[in-house]
Image 1: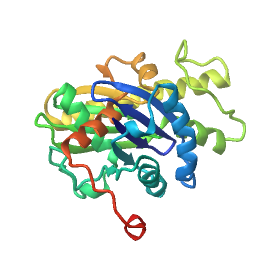
Image 2 (image 1 turned 180 degrees about the vertical axis):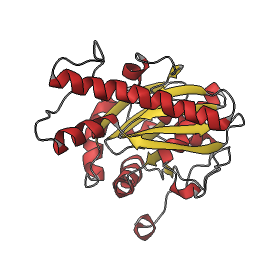
Image 3 (image 1 turned 45 degrees about the vertical axis):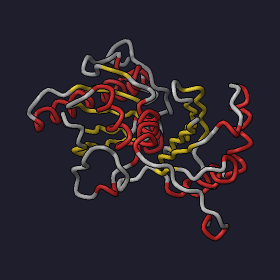
Length: 266
């Protein structure tokens, strides 16, 4: 079985694939100082509920945009699953060219989304990922990664609004009944929700204009279904696209060899 680890700025998602389907998905808050043993105590119990034993894991793959978290995640794979993890990085065999100025600077999650999106939906397309940042990644008809757009995430915007304006409360995100808010909270919810709908539609329109051809729009991330309710521009929601990218990347690349000595491990 494959253990896929998607470490984002907010959460780390662990998932196990048995070769046919995902057997379980679990998430925990991202903390760079969380040790490999802490991960293991938590994860092994959750896997046990799904009937997955530690020895069932034969491969591990990690995608992370938090470099400080990589060390302990790698130790988790080595110490608890006796495997050397494949780490998603630009120099691997992605199966497509990365047509940007500095491929090594592109977040692993963005390349993983591009890989899975082209595999399942073909192109050309845009992947919109509602994460800590809201990202738009453009893939051409041959699967090449062309770059994209990074905007502040919805929750970041809510926190910034609350933090910078003393009289504005912290709000939850939801689809307002109307655009015109009749009180402060309703006005803020309208600004956040319809503002982001406008951002999505505007950026996709500009990207399509620059690309010069129709582009499918695939969305992922926890807030994708909510924002898809407010626009027709999102054609497909795929909550597992980053995990599928990890699985496809692991299939394309040979498993790394576990170092034999502690010196090599460090």
